[in-house]
Image (cartoon, rainbow over all chains, first blue to last red; front, side, top):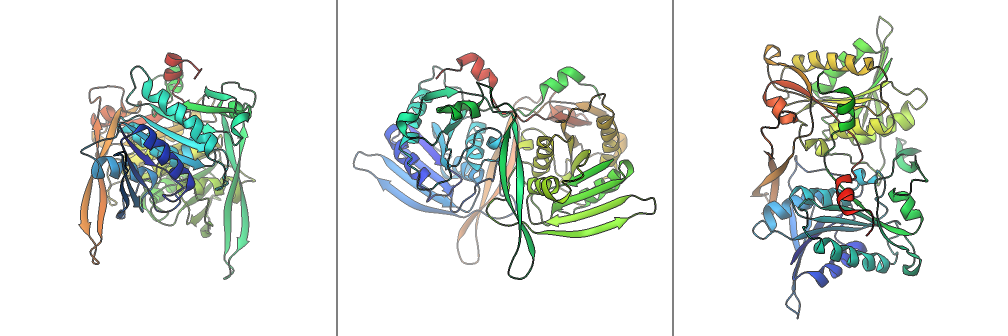
Length: 259
Length: 259
């Protein structure tokens, strides 16, 4: 088995190191292609108008014969998946793609802003089962052990599914709690709600005014039991299966297809 | 009526100038908040880790009393919508948001990579009807008149809908044809298919290898009559209504909600 890994916090983030160690439990070969800096909030962005540089930063064969290769790029998480699958490892595609562990929640509509989930959804576009993992705290020193504990179960489940759908794409969020406080794992749906921003206004040393974005999520359905926010608040790890057809079929059903 | 406009090609692109002129036909007040450089392919990305600068570049009252205000920012298209709605014009929100006209198609799954549609979908998150317009050529000198002709009809239709849904979000693509060759307007759905990349490999003057992304779309259903690609190929302007719930309900129905 071969696993490809990316993230959006950058190749040196604790989350991707922990996920790489976990992947080596499942796979004979692990390839990491990740940004060389933080690409948080970069969504599904791609680099069309400037070149991508790729540095091989690790090429290690372990005593048990397993192989770990790591590349750092100046590209976005989606660029990393694209250059991996269409260039770096195009002659030997992975069986599974993992993204993360992200430092910060990607529940609710954050899935759309997330670089971590950008990489995972791009993987699904290539027909390769893909899972993004996020821990609901931005604390870079947070204990990743509970996340890895549940990620192990979730990866095992994904690769055991009777007919592993080629476009499997899961958005996994883990509540920031000690292992014994986590109630289990639930499938969930994307919570309905909105982000609203407070822009902190200040001036730089040359007197130029600037704004710095800082938002919060307003949950439109805090009591919805199947929503990912509700499950996370009640101590569950959530898996939201993700699809990539943005068509609003309800509008078309209600209004018809003629202009 | 008040209209907010953004794009991803930047505030100086011909497409946004044409769309602004059109908006002034409908609205008493038009506010443009757009990137100060090209943000093409930036999807739903947001700027969390650096400050945003905003320059008012136009503040014009016309003889007929209409008002045009334009701001250029160093942020992404989504940043532009956020800083407009949560800061610059938060005390007088727009009735409609327009994005584009993009130079290049945003049909099929390109909707997910598109900064133009990032701005439109962000507008819908704020409960404001939003429409993104794209012309299927990257030629910056392409004739925008046919696009504006159909955009006028589409805006009129959107604001005439009996109960204008607050989350209306339309992805409009216009085939690059002379006006008389365009067959009309059709609602359509997002075409199923994938982008695959060819990475052009070269070296910079210091001998460092780089890759430059160049992709093409592989249509998985070229004969599907209701798909946006099929309609565009047959000379129609397409409107794909967009929704923002990425949950794969089919997976949940097939596999249940329990882990």
